[in-house]
Each structure stands twice: as structure tokens, then as C-alpha cells.
Length: 211
Image (tube, rainbow, N blue to C red; front, side, top):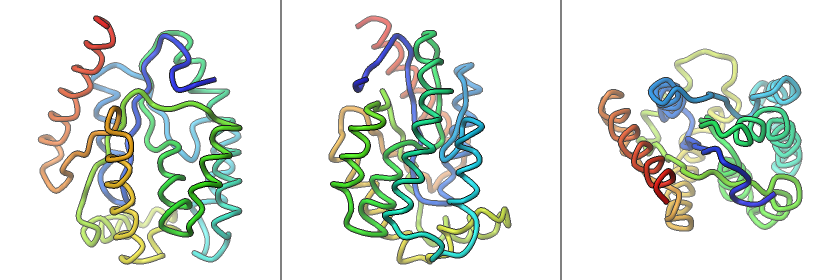
């Protein structure tokens, strides 16, 4: 596997917890008639691992253990959901992918980016064609995330300083991968964000079709 495996088109959404990326991922998938998936999760086995990662106390796992769990979930997701969709020539939209592990465990929780990258190269070796980072004020996002009361707030429980580190990490990621990452101002009405995202996605798909 490599960065571009097949005829389909792979779009991901990233951002801090409560940034609104899940809403935007759903909206774009609906607009494009694309397959919608998520991480951690997106396949039966990965959904089981998801509960281990997003529920419970903040100190439940070390960053090193989280990397292994996320990689295991992502591998199953890749095999069962992402690659079949791409090989069929479809468009697939995922709420989070490998960039989240690069930032959460590689930067914000610990300095383990090299470990994350080596595991990714060995077990995943797939990159999105286009990534949207929904950039939202960390305090607003944290309040929104905790306010959901979903029970999946383990990472929100690390607090606003953690959210600030995450935001800085995602912005740095956009500089690292300028060809595929687009930073979107998330401090606006969801309809305005969705319109910008849809326009950028359609442009990327048109360039793919005519390239």
C-alpha cells in the first residue's frame, strides 16, 4: 500500500474535540453522496476497540498503549471499510484518521511522533487525498464536547491546555502536508463552513477527474 492505492477518493476531517468536524463530515458525505465512516471505529472490530479508547478515566491508558490500540482499530477499519470503498472507485469521508494519532499521541500527550510514523508506515501506509482541519477556539470546543454528555469524553477530560496543544499540533500538520490539508475556520455558522468545505472538495474531485 502507499499514499494512493486505487481509483477512489479519500477525504478526512480532523480537529480538536468539539470542533464541529463530525457535523461537517456528515454534511459533506451527504452532499457528495459519499460513504461516511469514523475513527476510532468504522468497522465492527474497530468499534469494539473504540469503547476502550474514548470511555473511562483519562489515565486509563498510556500514550504508548493508545498508539497500539488506535493502530489496531485503524488496520481493521482500513481492511474492512476504507480499501473496499476506494477499490470500488467510490468517495469515502472519514471523521478522523491517522493524523489524529500523529497529533494526539505523537505531540499533545507525549513526544512519540516517530513511533506513530513508524507504526503507520508498517501497518497502515495509506494517506487521505484531502484533509480538512476544522479550526475552532479550544475553550468553545471543550465546552461543546463536554456538553454533549455522550460518555465518550475521555480526551476532553484532559482539559483546555490539552486542547490548546492539539490545536497547535493540527495547525502545524497543515504546514507539514500543504498538498492535502486545508484549514477551515470553524468559528462560523455550520452552513458557512459546509459551503466552503463542499466547494474545496468538489474542486479537488474535479482536478482528480481531469488530471
